[in-house]
Length: 342
Ligand SMILES: [Mn+2]
Image (cartoon, rainbow, N blue to C red; front, side, top):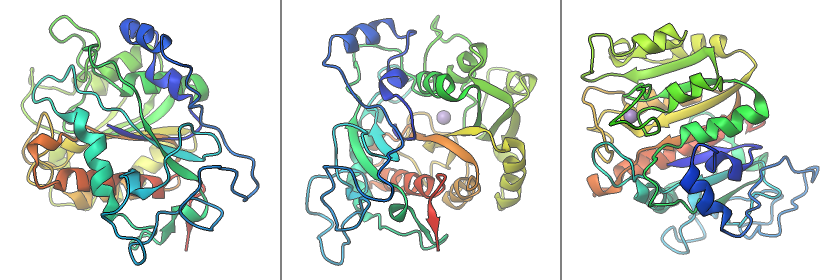
């Protein structure tokens, strides 16, 4: 799991009251200060950790001058800093897979995505976005997860933190799975239940939720009945086949309006032919083009955070799944508010 967060207290995001064991574990650790905030530099870099360029913002070193394969692998070869101080947006890894229902391995996702992200460049050739000309971004490392706590979910505690700051948020959820189960093997918290928990706690503005790419065999004839009953818009994969998703995203922008929106992208939304490195693959999924269309279609929304989850490198030794994940994260950064476009 990899995240891009804006203006969120990360400690609150990762350590929720629901996570008893995890909370105890974290409370025994040194205080963390990863509180994201808008910097007040007025266009002047205030980060003491900027090492990559002479520009006012962190910029990945160009492979025209610095060998891609050199250096310690951070996300997009951005500087690493311990805290989010001075940043407009931060990449943070959450290496967790302990409660996965099928193939484990996603704990290695952030590390592999960082390695593959060395191929990312500074500008988006397709959209002319220049994220490093208007946002201060860095890699703030990984959350020190409790790998002995089997409660494997991330969207739930993050949305608790996001909603605490913003109130109930809209959600663009791209996934093969609805992740709205109630109880799995007696457990209320797992990677198949987060959005039901979010609704129960009032974290989502249910009229501003869309789930895209859902598919596969289910536990009942209508697997997405619960989602629809909450007011979510459900766009099954079958509705996406053979189409551009740009028109859909125009409708989604209308649905989301100007309120805060969170984007959660499970790599298994993509067809396993493109992204086999994941824990619960489902055939006949979205193409990478459609994935990019969805993310680019979020431009203009008031995005408060994004995640990319379930990259499991052991199931794709080519690295392509992690490479795809890295590129999708770059696309997400390019549609954050205030990104400069040429
Ligand atoms: Mn999924």
